[in-house]
Image: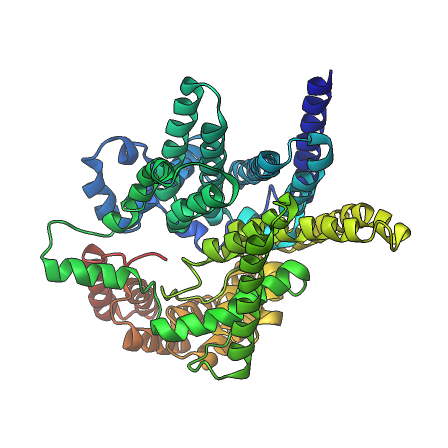
Length: 553
């Protein structure tokens, strides 16, 4: 009877998690494609033919068609495959893609619930007194507005999928280690290995998975060191799949080393040191957003730093070190093996480990993006909820009324966060409103103004489009395609001389821009300058034939 009640409570928890997640994202199903969605979905030739995933010979055709470069196909095969299946069913209908993203997000929350339940269950077998913590952690994870960029921005399915396989691997590994029969041990262990490989082939953030597995093994499980090392070693071998995907074995040693070096500078001009010290402040910003998710922004105009002794950098580093030392201290001083204290320490380590790929020594063009905290946020919530329960225990005798308010306060917080998530998703429903929101928060950055110009132009607001493109051009005269976009608007306004001036400015900065050559040819044709039009068109076709796509972030 007790086992039946436990199963019912677990099912009730899972149902509540899925309902609150669905309600929070119920207004996203018609949100349009944004930014990299065109690269990975609407204008990506590889996902429009499943042969590219089933036949190795189709890879050459894939490269010729102009999709992401070959290393991206090898490294993010699983995510691209899901987009291909989506395209096969839904085409360019955005709703199907949003349904899949939300389904993965809900699945992640449920797996996180089961994983934390296992963490506490290893040390405390009483389900009745320990199940509330995993439930509230999962509810915070599924409802928090910082997750909107990972869920509603369709391209970030790579993050969602990598997180799903990451969590499934951990859960399967735990079940394997705790299983009573050898058959079940083998089944779960092989499953964990499969999920680890799938995670590695989805997104590079999975590189930290074996480290997290080892951390769980050390903190929650027992066994002889050699036997534990034997369990973990195959998972560490899966890490090789990511660097091996970067290597072209047909190249010379020098070219291979250069390729690896280039792959760890993803569209960034920052040095590794400058990127690292900037990340100290970025990680603190992530923590602030997790505590207080206000003024969220798709495209932050974030400062970069070049010295450790900027006050922002120095004090951020001190704060992060204090948090890390707290985790080490809690784990070391936890003599009673309290599951809540152990979970807090594990959550702190989880947060830093899972952030390390994108917030360390690998420079990425954009120093901050909210979707990067999707997987690390699980660790943050592992800290917050058990801390509240420890406070509840401390207040049992001292402040009975306040002690009773802890759980209702967390439930109320989850409701508030769900409403905030729903409201944040309203911004994603309309492209014009979305980019106006970004421009209002990053007025000094060229890219948001440039991006806002397109919906203005598509809705016939040509003067406003010109204004946004001009602002972008003033902020960054070398911003790629801004002069080309301005020329298009001038062409639609029949201001042909102005259009020619902008196309020439674009080609002065980027002479290989075949779109600008084509647009300039059309303007010449409308002016009756047929010889000039023919020359520009032929140049455009030559450049298009020799175009090779660069590496994707």
